[in-house]
Amino acid sequence: HGGTTTTTTTTTTTIANLPPILVDADVAAAEREEKKHVLEVYEIISDHFSSTRHSPWPRVKQWLLSLPPNYVVADVGCGNGKYLHVNPTITMIGIDPVLGLLNICDERGLASGRLVRGSGVTLPLRSGCCDAAVCIAVVHH
Image (cartoon, rainbow, N blue to C red; front, side, top):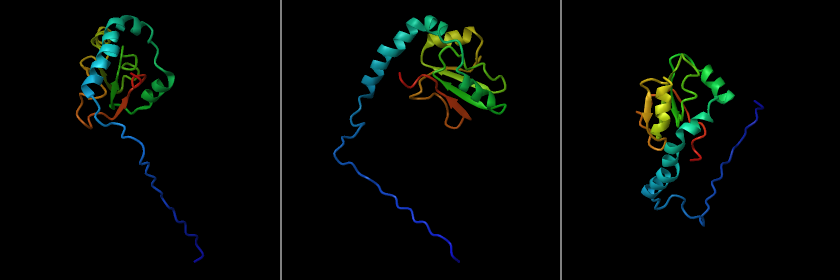
């Protein structure tokens, strides 16, 4: 019939001399360091931090506005909640480990009843309960 046949070959490379990346990770030590150098600092500076983070990033705002009505979106590391009010047709759940920042969200009336103190490492949400999630400027911490 004159057709062309294409064969694809996949090669798997094993690098034997590299040490495992996550062997004997001291999770408790990492959590202590995060608490000391990130969480405690943000509790102290939450008011100042909030005053410098007031405008949603345009592309994130555009994406949130493009979501269908009634979508449920987790904002992991919501900070002062600047994304929680962008699209009133969706339900936003604000998650942050810093109580001071969650209090700012609450004082502003953002995501009323949908603010959760928690971490992106161990999300306090049931699997599959959200249609989407955002995690903006958080992972570097």
